[in-house]
Image 1 (cartoon, helix red, strand yellow):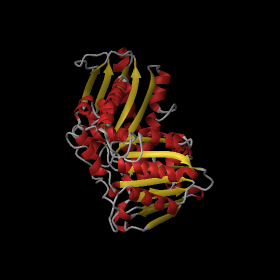
Image 2 (image 1 turned 120 degrees about the vertical axis):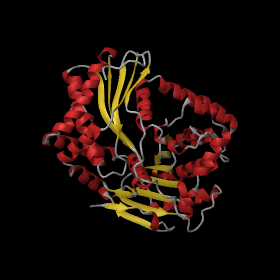
Image 3 (image 1 turned 90 degrees about the vertical axis):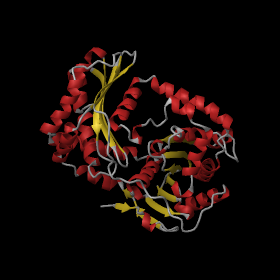
Image 4 (image 1 turned 30 degrees about the horizontal axis):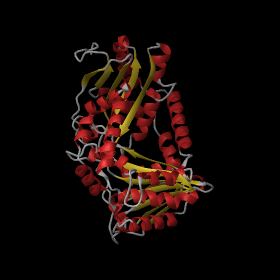
Amino acid sequence: MTVVPLPLKQNQPGDTLIHGADGGAVVRRSVLPGGVRVLTEEMPGQRSATIGFWVGVGSRDEAPGQHGSTHFLEHLLFKGTRRRTALEIASAFDEVGGESNAATAKESTCYFARVLDSDLPMAIDVIADMITGAVLDPQEMEQERDVILEEIAMDSDDPTDVAHEHFVAAVLGTHPLGRPIGGTPEAIMAVARDSVWDHYRRYYRPDELVITAAGGLDHDVVCRLVVDALRAAGWELESGAEPVQRRSTAPAQITGTAGLHVVKRPVEQANIIVGCPTIVATDDRRFVMSVLNAVLGGGMSSRLFQEVREKRGLVYSTYSFASSYADAGYFGMYAGCTPSKVRQVLQLLGAELDKLAQDGISEDELRKAVGQLCGGIVLALEDTGSRMSRLGRAELVSGEYQDIDETLRLIKSVTAAEVQMLARELASAPRTVTVVGPFEESETFGL
């Protein structure tokens, strides 16, 4: 068993965790002055490296009057610093054939780049400059406000995105995780530059910062480059400072609204989601949930795909999914169909979950699901970006690092009885149903 805990109590600057990972890779972790955490995975033979600067703040952390600020910052940090213009930031990566981007989630934000190993010092310097030296120019902010509104409008034109956003809002209720990551048009229009600036100053600081990197690199060199870049930017890295505590993983009280929620849209295909709240990200049953999803709706051989599409021809796309966070999570089943078939498809989605809860899964289904998951994990982690992200999630979410072999072992240890037990829990929970299509809100679909 290779599970390495990442406790905060040993986070004195200079302490380093060293772990031999799979394939000859070496994972190391250091806490630098200021409480900055650095985790790297050195991959022998790699000529590239991916580095990510993480801040453990997402859309759930926004105070009233700041909704949409996290996503706004993701855009604005590329718009210039005290040292670089937006064009200079973009050119720094383009001229070496690198890639840079950012991602805002509900519980974290990550700014990352993939470059040749020889260009890693440049990537660290540029992203550190973005993190520490953003100016949030008022004129640039107003221009980017329009860009974000266009992004939200684009998503609103996709009925599948609409179904997922409305489902999450309904199933999680008043919990901050129920809010859309990008904010609503009303929130984006209303948020002031000072509110975004306050959000930036509150969270973009040394003890919140986690830096992860994977590929052709040297851990000690990365640490030195990070310290030099942050100090050059004017950050005071105090000796003895500790990182902030991780989020509480105690399950929250979820006050969602079960039952039917109809969203009227003039579309040719109805989009359906049926689901309920479920386990948190650190729950020991997360591997059981992965197997359950694989059997129920994880691929072309899954029960939903075979029953609803292959046997009956009622849909083009159908699948199940689960998303888990520090203190809440949700499970759902999706299908897209002709509006006249909504009632029949809804019945089939519910019936497949009930059947799984009542009868369980066969050993053959378990074997196939485990094989699907194990193969997918190994293939996904063959690039440096996936490994960089894996380190970030380990540090911010669970507080422990698992190598691939241990992860595969835990998946292979899942039993059919455990899958059925979790299915019973899901099937017995009050169900939230979201339907997006050309219907009146009073439509019941026989529910």
